[in-house]
Length: 325
Image 1 (cartoon, rainbow, N blue to C red):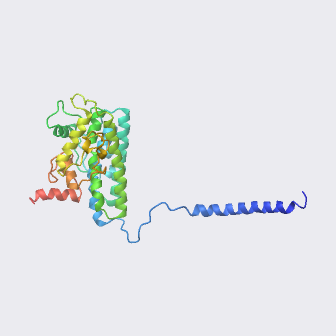
Image 2: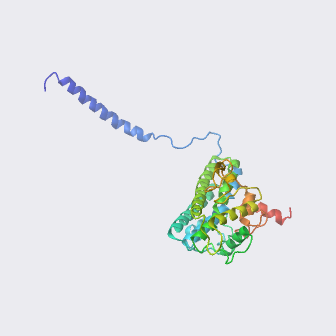
């Protein structure tokens, strides 16, 4: 090596040393300073407002209904075995059993069931809760719902546990009601923790409803054995019944609708139920109780809740009847 090249060689050598030194010292700095990933709330923001608690406990009624129906339908057992701590001493559901499902449907419903376990845990760990209310998940109770939807007694009685189509039609009865309840509750929440909880619950409940609707939409023209009614007609009848029981206008639509009810009035397909602006419908607690009780009255229990729902909101409606108010 000539003396003329020596300075350039040394310069390159020391440059490499400096790069190695900086890299070794920068990596710990980068690792110890991760980028922000979560929202920053104002100092005066309220995590859980006292008024949010009753509003977020009320959905436990529907979440319990969904959890046990999906778990029993797919696995043959429910919360008492999967997550007994969430039952909190409540009575076992009436008439729940394992459904005769094909592999695809069983996989879907199993996932739904475990999702509902997570929902129950998330709500109860955030705002507290109450024991599982008495639920009627019997085939006879579902048969009454379908009879009321069609306006006459189906012969033989509709059995939700008989096969995959029947089970998905019976599932069509449930998650959408909870979805509309979350939409209706959202404007009244104040705390950022409870609003985040509701957002997470609404996202999954909406997804469940979309899966059920798409499953049925793909089979819209199929006849539901042994009845002379298509899958689409079943969904339309069930949605009409819920509108009638809710008593607050059109907030429910089957998987096929008239053109004037389709998205932008340009489609008769209705994979998702939504209003004129394609926004989800919202329902109040009173509307939901009228529907799940099957009585058209938030004061008169029945249907899926023979003794009524639990939580302060549901109990207050029941007390008004007892006191004659």
